[in-house]
Length: 223
Image 1 (cartoon, rainbow, N blue to C red):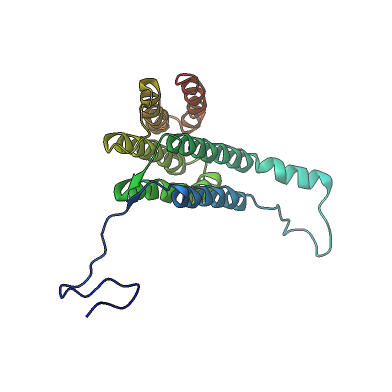
Image 2: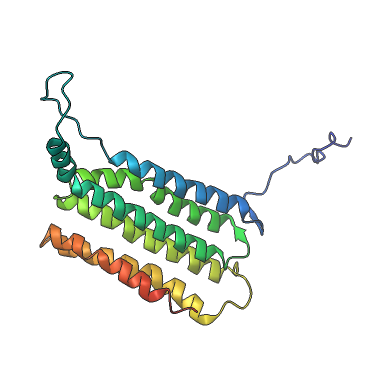
């Protein structure tokens, strides 16, 4: 007897849905990805704390000088917020430009993308640690380390899509080289900063500016 309407017939062996997924409609993947990036950018602001003055008598407001001094004391936190915001924005641009050349997906591509999104989602926590303990090597290396893994994951995403023939046809060779080199070079900048941090935590953070130099240099090569 045939199965119920809308369900596969009972063949005696049971119905097993396919374990893999594949298709050409990338809208759900991109919608989820954009949502994670937007949520992470929003959560970053939680690392900024409004100054409080517990030593003031109840009902007494701080003076302008006291408030300005408290805000000035948090300059590293503001700087860390701005830097993390820009880094997430860079990874969003990287993700967006990568998927401009991807035509279809399979299960492996989806899961590689999920690995990248996990790292984006945890970025606000990493920033909180870094902003609170920016003078400590562990906090600096944690922030740099997640940039290293993001670069490697972004490169893995592109290389897998290329090898699995998930790209749009006739992707120019300079574009393919650009996407491969980009993630590796950004990862190299932050990996070098980890090495530098064993000698100077401050100088390790200064080397991060080269990530923007690399990004700017690479954006003009594929066109």
